[in-house]
Image (cartoon, rainbow, N blue to C red; front, side, top):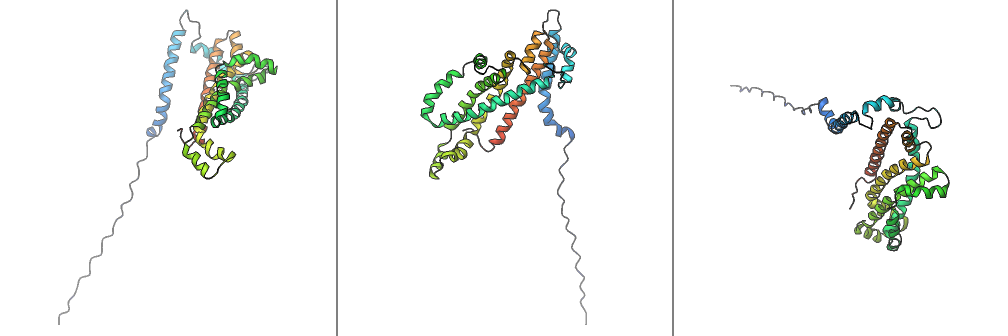
Amino acid sequence: MNIATSKPAPAAAPVSVAEPALMPERSLAARLRPTLDAVLPPLLVVLALAGLWEVVASGPNATLPPPSKVWADSSELITDPFFDRGGLDKGLFWHLLASLQRVAVGFALAAGAGIATGLLIGTSKLATRGLDPLFQVLRTVPPLAWLPLSLAAFREAQPSAIFVIFITSIWPIIINTAVGVRNVPQDYRNVAAVIRLRGPAYFARIILPAAAPYIFTGLRIGVGLSWLAIIAAEMLIGGVGIGFFIWDAWNSSNLSDIVVALAYVGLVGFALDRAMALAGRLVTRGTSAQ
């Protein structure tokens, strides 16, 4: 009797699981490229303008100092903005700080009053007819034209400068807030009517979120005007402040210090604008101007 023998089946080959391909690590140049693309173009433009300025201002008939002379005359002012020798002999940091404090107070008052007034005008046709023509006239008055009246009213330099900031920056806040309120979609208003949302809750949940992009546009314009106004006002009221520093340098025929101060003024103004723009993006995230 033959016994049938069977060969054992060959063992199945192990199935290899392909490991996920690792993403190639970005090179240092690739990681730095976005930063370089943002920084290099303006840096090259600044260097080109500085070189042109150096050439033009180095001529025999030039009246403005070239960059090399600005550095030679005002290197201490540039490298050490924190010195304080008492009185008005201070570094640019302290002058800028005094100006920023005035701007903070005046702009905060303008923001509060401007948003409240803009909400009133945007929601009330009667308020629009009564106040809008008056505001359109007052907003065309130059900032420094208010200074004599503010000095006569307050009899002190500090509140007078704050009032000039306030009266200069409030108009774009009022106008943009009113436009934002008028452009709130009708669907939002209908929903508020259905759920019977009225009073402060209506403004907090419907009007303000929808009008926020417009409000921050007004605030961004207003903070820029505030910085412009305080420089001009401080030239006349005196005391510690970047505006007075520029005027005092002019009286001392120190043009190099004026150039340095103007560079600081521009950088601070740029920082204020970017800070307000960032605040607007954070607050209005998920919304857009209609």
